Image (cartoon, rainbow, N blue to C red; front, side, top):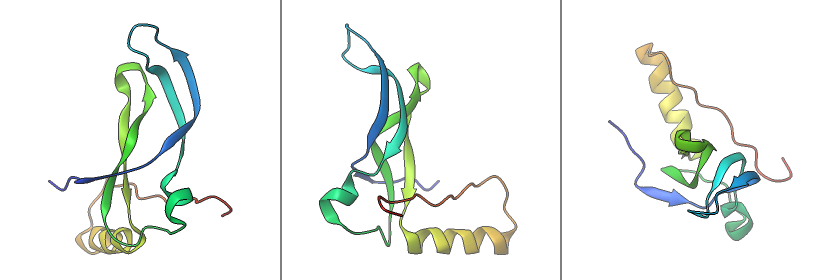
Length: 96
């Protein structure tokens, strides 16, 4: 199984229902690629987890982000091997 080893900085545009006990939000949605403001560069290669989980409650989990070239290589393998179930979508960067 392939699994990301690196974490890339993301934030959530929408945070709702702050828990007074644990200090975390119940809902974290609308991912924002914060790393882009720091580096000014798109990711070319690699597989990364987002620094925060997205979703609601116990269902929150980090997203997996692929570099552009890595995504193209995986898409090609999926097509040639006729695999199903993978969803590789483009992440829009600020000003895209």
